[in-house]
Length: 235
Image (cartoon, rainbow, N blue to C red; front, side, top):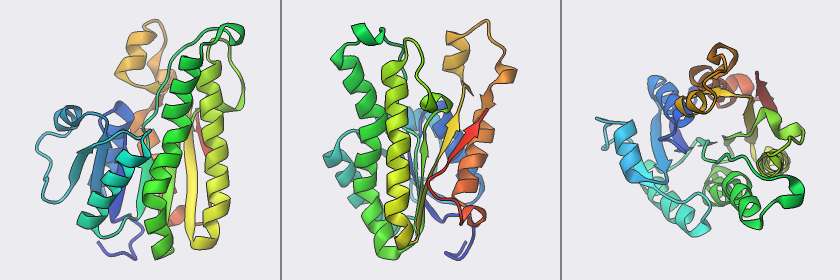
């Protein structure tokens, strides 16, 4: 694979051990990419990717809400890969919450840290290297619900909405440097956790992680060269 290929040669993926992260990782592995798989727990990465060639790919534990942790990880990734073509930020969190008038600050901070600030920390770690090469792309995972407030989900929806605004701002800032920034915005993903949480729902109405992963790959491809600051709704 050459750098002129439409397939990203070097990919950084956060939240790699989760259901969507594993699907995105498999998509890029099938495309022949070299991947740095990042997650909060090293043991979950080892469980999710048994037998992965550690001499070619990387598996690293990190805290996506910590700028120090991300700087340490990016230094190791860049030392090994020399450069990065694509950063896919899947890591985040979801929780139901109290009504707005009863919302606890801890819940608000948790959602904002996991879903909004994490994008800043990851960007600070890897975007300078993309700017130096004047190419690359960043793909985040926002949410189909980010455009409208929902009962008992205010902190989550606000954090995903904030993430969308960060994606748009970053896209405007980085476009002159030849870098694209976009997101996928799924409604409900078909994951084991969602099936367990909603046993009476019909998963056939949900978005498969494989399809979501293919959309991420599209945003990282040459076919999306003219796509900037967009949130592709997956419904």
